[in-house]
Length: 471
Image (cartoon, rainbow, N blue to C red; front, side, top):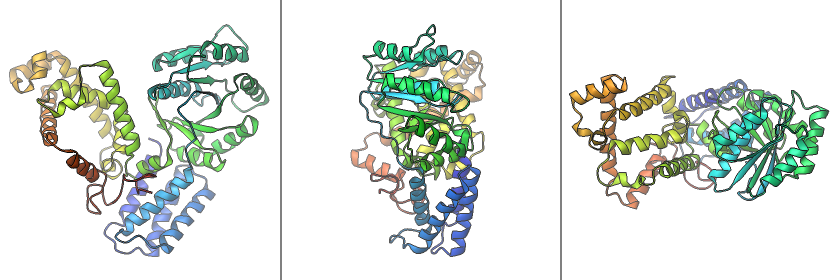
């Protein structure tokens, strides 16, 4: 994934400071060189890299760390704060009635982004609608309509109309009951006069509350020039960076946006309508440095649990803490996890599990784990209701029958039963816990146990307002 190499490299360099009571100038030089190398590989502008590394070096050598803070944690905090400052604030995007117009070049992902944004707003309790005005690209209408159906949101377009301003005007009227109207526009290979005139015409009709520019992360540093050109032409209130799941140039795009005094609204992290997240520099950098992102994790957990309950109104997640934990319960938990997104993304959000621990796993570890979960689902399809409710009764003869029915090896059935047993034992530890016990456990997960705690020596991580250091 984007910037994975940057994150692992930074974490590896910082880990070289573990156990040191003092940091020499030579140590700082080594760290700064590694940061420079990592950022340049991530396509961040060299002058910006130099400015950032100079700031990190001067702070690390001149500022006194707070009492009780290890040298590694102090440098980690400095790197975190400087990277957050580099990426800037998130675009203001209130959850209220508004009209948003999307602009961008061919291939930037505007149509997919419109559906992703609509899905995101719908999960926030608003009613969104997509208005497709692209009359130039063959298939734009069909793609937009299909994406809107995938996102389960309202859609308007007219494949027989050649004038995008007419479509925009009629679309606004047809979707007037929507809380958020998202207007998708045409693109070009470059920002030429024809595209500018067309967007300006649509803007006059739509009168959007916000213009958002959609940029492909693979553009790297050239995103800066494109953001500047669109800002001068129609005015940009924020940027959406797409395809962050497959390019090493994402660092350049992220940094370039901030250099134009723009802000970032969303990040596109995959191909489905759910693969979008609100950009917050603190959480993004926290994940990059292996410190998790509890805010984003909490949002995904709540959304996944809500969706699972909507499909099965009789299932209550709290019930697994009472009584018997069945394979049906385990299946619901697996379903909720799948709804949270790719496993490697989820791990990055969990303090103590992303970053360093994930760096030690084989490259295909996440794929193997997700494949095993899919196998478990197939295996459970071949079980009887009684076996799902009472897995302890499954012996060798039943394992053989289930293996034949599912087409999976007997070993996979045993792995499922063992996984269920481990989860059941873990849940029993939670049963009877009071709120104080739960709170204490969460603090341990977040690294509140101090330098030697489970959080890997990042005391205070996950607390407070502005980020993992409680600023």
